[in-house]
Length: 150
Image (cartoon, rainbow, N blue to C red; front, side, top):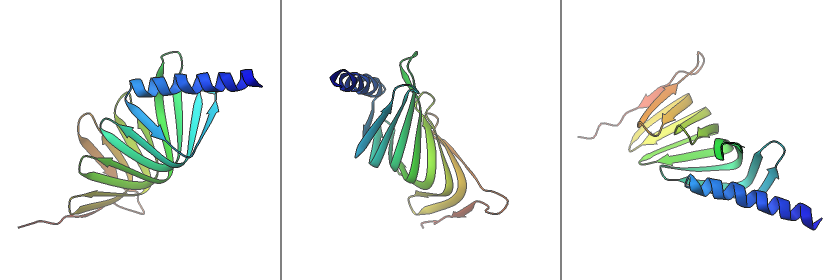
């Protein structure tokens, strides 16, 4: 039994070392580790801090490539919120690819920047190039509210 806990502890340290090397810090109420599938699941009050983005959610699934020693994807679910500079976006779920700096958010997405507001079904945020694409669907088109200050 001790050996099992020691292996899990070493695995978590390995994972966290790789996350910190990418400058990603994660906190949550619970951490579940699946060594067989190279997945770690953070549950409850999840907060992710990376150099250029902050992410909050109820659940985060980290998939990593152990051969390359890197985090591949971060899946966030339930009450997702991101902050990037002066942009705040909320939605139901999302995925972040740290290697490319791309964050995608889905379902009931709302983006607020200063006094401007956009509602859409999908947001693609390219953090490295400071670009974003907002998409709607045939039922829910993109809605934008622009406040011009004079």
